[in-house]
Length: 125
Image (tube, rainbow, N blue to C red; front, side, top):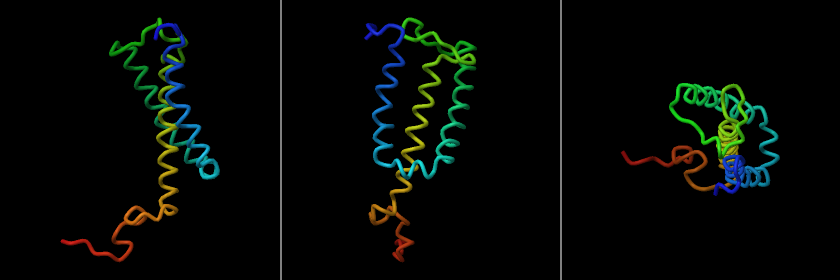
């Protein structure tokens, strides 16, 4: 695993996330493009927060990354790999939520789009 040297963490992060992100765009490109503002804000806000919190944690010594497995590129007190991890994770989560929410009505699965009350069904008390 260390045969990749300084690129190890970054290669594994990209290999982990990019197939999911590409699949999300293949399946829901038009839907995601139509909601680009929501997507941008939904990714940017938590990514910035998590980067700041992680930079603080690294600065005070809560954890660190192995310099032999990272690029040693730092952005604002944060290793590149950490920022990329938070960005990729938030992209997958926000796109997934948008796609699931947007696809509910198309699925027509009982109870998924609107719930029992929306269909006039009373729940037992």
